[in-house]
Image (cartoon, rainbow, N blue to C red):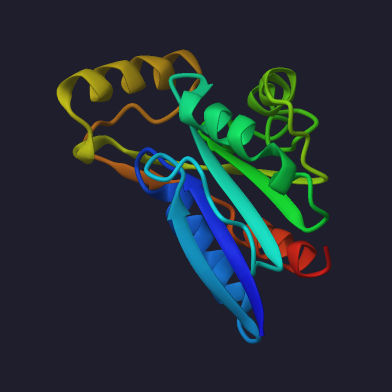
Length: 174
């Protein structure tokens, strides 16, 4: 049985939902453990065959704790079977949904000392009813400026699950 460490930096839970989907795609003989990097900055990677880091963008930025986590764990992240994915709403648009075309991944690679060998970008979810007043107002403004959904009574999931499944398959062959 292969042990897989699924690390996440999630704002609203879509990153964790994507990790759950990946765990299901991996199936047997993989055993997965989840850790929130916001609560455990230093992690023991011993005993894991593969590591996957998923992080979401909020207001145009990945969480600063992601970068702190990378700095504290750079040696372990440099191992061969480690992958990274970024979740953001901009990835709902064609042409902004790959590591090569994502402004957030480009910014990540400039700021981070770690450059993962395998990366992906997935569209996230818009959860207006769950947001507080400030977040709902700000996200609505951003969506209006970028041609997205502005009906604050809606929840919209933009994640392309086939793309996630394809990434899961690639992760198995790392």
